[in-house]
Length: 487
View 1 (tube, rainbow, N blue to C red):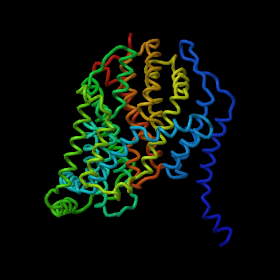
View 2 (cartoon, rainbow, N blue to C red):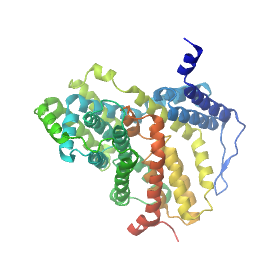
View 3 (cartoon, one colour):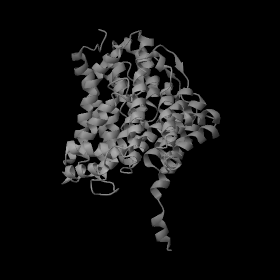
View 4 (cartoon, helix red, strand yellow):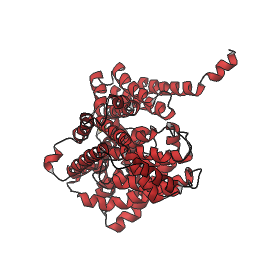
């Protein structure tokens, strides 16, 4: 083998980004003490050595995740290893986050997706949908997006993504390109992830972030926001984003084929071949619906609120194996790369929070806008939350930024309500990184797009999101009766 052929096989780009991540980590970790963050009341927030280390790990992980220099789950393992080796947090703490209840919730959601696929429920649902939406690929996009958004009003967007994902696989199998990545495939799966976020902001049932934000809001402002009040303000934004995202994917990832000829007849034929609904499909459907109902009722029944949602959804996993709907082979085929991705995201999120790095970042960011016009200040908070929620749990992003923003707001004449809602909108739609939300990672399992492609398409999508937030803050919400200033 010649030296030239060896050189051609050597992946210089991969090596470059591996060392870029390491260089960023080293420069930040070894740099001298950074200045304190100082809030408008003169309170100092020093950045400890551990906090600086957390930011260093954060930069390395972000670089490796975007450019996928190693499998995304392996980058997550590096997050735990670096915390332990550089004494940023004890190993017992850093690795314990890898089995956080939120990670197990994602595991159970993926199991539900496996059950839907194995029993045939997925194909049954996919064929029924195709019989309704027809042959036009634009309508297939729209039908899938509308179903995804609507389902997130009643169940966690992670569970929705896990349920819809196998349905999309069944639909894509009829596109005629096998498993080959196509524009239609990218748009279908990325669109599902984006729209799951858009739909999840509409009610408190779509994600935990809403309840956490309302808790902070009540504690700091001493004002209650009801379930239906939140939906009143968020529904127009969630559904506007759903339709705009449909338009976005029709422009940026317009399917290669305008229609799939004979698709409706093919769907009818395949649906007929499935025969009558089976015992396993009925049992699986009852278990999943039961889990959804119980998790939804937690918001209304105090006795159920005490039971963690992860325990409820994991009960479904146990039942699937007890009733022999699933077996050991199914357990071994779980996409652990995706689960590890979220385990690492939890670990770096808690690391930034517990070391004080997140608070330091939030105070420094918001201080830049403390003399600004009220609209700029609100948008700066929404933008900060959007960036943070792409790297760490959206609950953590809310917990970091909302308390600081709500304290600064009165001095700028900004009403706390608009800060709460603007933050919740952007916290629900992380379009840049897979770690921002479970639906992103679930969609990635389709192998239709790379992490770099997800990031690149996420930039214009995030700009679109900020435009919609600006429109809501300045025009729509005031018309609907929301106070935006205290003057």
